[in-house]
Image (cartoon, rainbow, N blue to C red; front, side, top):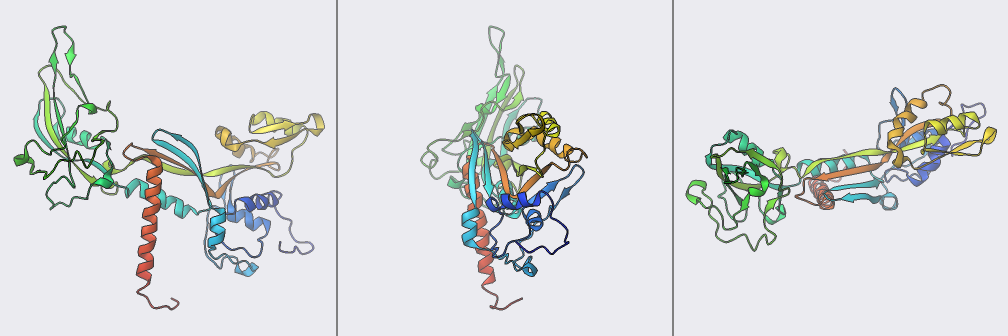
Length: 388
């Protein structure tokens, strides 16, 4: 610690606690040979959530940021390996939640953006309508079809340029043919058209002269699991007796950056890990009041004048965090409690549309980021080895 001169201003009451916590969660891989003062360590690793504003929201990775204090903030690979960690906390169907520690928000946001807009899927691009006597216009029907997520691995197919001819390597063909009729019992058949009505044509188009789509071989061996919508109960149209829809769709490979229908996630986002800090231990009536205001989050220990509180699991009481923020602004409780966010500890959520498994999406995003970094390094090789 840097020495404090006699008569110098005292550190914030909770800064020492933040410095101790930061030892276990000290952010990105920087080589801190000397130790920062507790107040600066708090600013480096924590966002302080005040009732009306947030403090210390910026982050920097400049190697010379703390040079005047004798602290080297240069990247340290060994420290990064020690501090980086991923822990999956929930995996249900197409949803995954995990905690990621030891990286900056720039890395976390890059992974998020790659999953949203740079991870490919297969989606309906061209619709050849043979017959449509429903009340839905052809354009609206085509748009609805394009947004249906398909259960097929896009890595099995190639990208198709505008000038390329549809083939078994770059195109999937689906067929939809339904007609609504009234049964002798009076009930309606096919009055609702669902995504389950889409049929995969592994041999290619049934009307190649109109679609210009001819396969040299079957796709049955390429996609042994078949091609189908992720969900069979997506409503496409409603029909009345005598109305019919007959069409053929061509699906190609694309990314969400071009159109949202190719995005493999319903959404993916992250938030910072919350932290409730006791600036000093409340005692007596104040402790009892705080435990009553924040049940479950703060556990009361002792009674009477010897009553104290212990902070519980913050993740299990998300709904109380805004109340902590409000209480930290009240004069009676401000000296005791504070809400903070850990800058380099992220709670990541991935909601896949079903084309990819959530963990596969994350793995692909990491690989894509590595390839981008490799391209940058290759580009830097053309410059002479000198300082800019």
